[in-house]
Image (tube, rainbow, N blue to C red; front, top):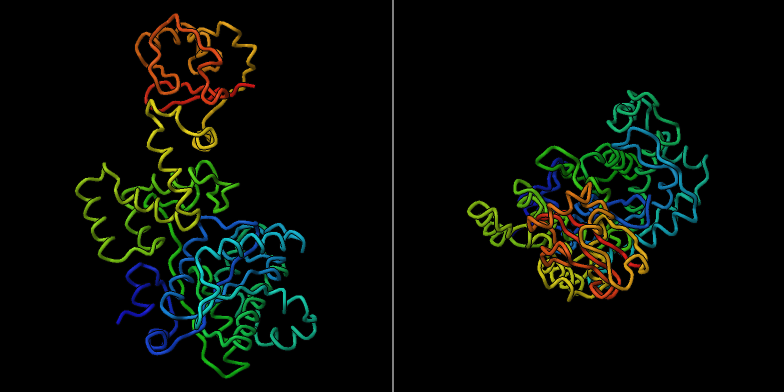
Length: 424
């Protein structure tokens, strides 16, 4: 029977691990944890690989713990960072912790009979321990030489700004977290991205020294695109799980636009689809990449977990009419979500007047064309659309009666260049 490690190996989610972990996962039910940095009130797509790691762990019968670092979040993890983070106050951290918890609940079962997920805040113990006790109980077990060898520290030492004592202490604090979870919940495994290996092994060493016990670590590769860029970074900015920060439509489109070279790896990492289904999608992509079947499945699967089936249905309905003449049939709320990133211009209803504004004048007014003569040429060539209907009449007048929902007009030049006019 396949084990959690077998599953992670197939999905490309094993970069390094401690000796003996494979046997442990095959023979025992373990408690494992992953930490989440509460730098914002929402997780983003870059966090999803970590979340899925915990979710897969629970599906194989093991017990997951999510630490939301209310304590360490006040310091900041230097791993993978070239500069020190802005320190957050306790009030903002509390807001961020609450937001992250609500999102984790979409992936983890907190009511399972035998292996219910648990969320803990390391401020519960880090906020109460005094400095002298911490230095005596944990700090004395770490030499400076040991800490300097860790990649997260050595990289920062090579940077122009160096590393503060505050961030230098992060490794010891995270190791202390592992010790606390070992004592409180019998947690013997920490997982995370490969940039966390140094922090994880520090915790393993501390448990070995203080409890004379064996703990383990497992890390997966840091996700990058086929183009070599960091996964989740887009020209439009971060893709958040919070629908108020990133609309469900934009979230869906992010996955729909994934490169053919990345889509199968993403299906393995970010969905619960089985090997047979993903292999079939790989074959479909190889045979007919233009159909983007794998991308559609990826977008639907991830969006359903994050935003729910109802939101996905709305997004797919909106996507299906995005360039069709039926766009005026969309509810105004859905239309505005679809067009959230489209350039727009506000125009008062009085500017349109009773008789309306000529199509050529309107195109030039919103700068969809650089001049009236160019606007006229576009209309004559059939390259202009109003609400996705071709506008080929040079004498056409556009009035408030043409507005979708009485509030917006959608102009399009060519196949994709759109402009939204919001009537005020």
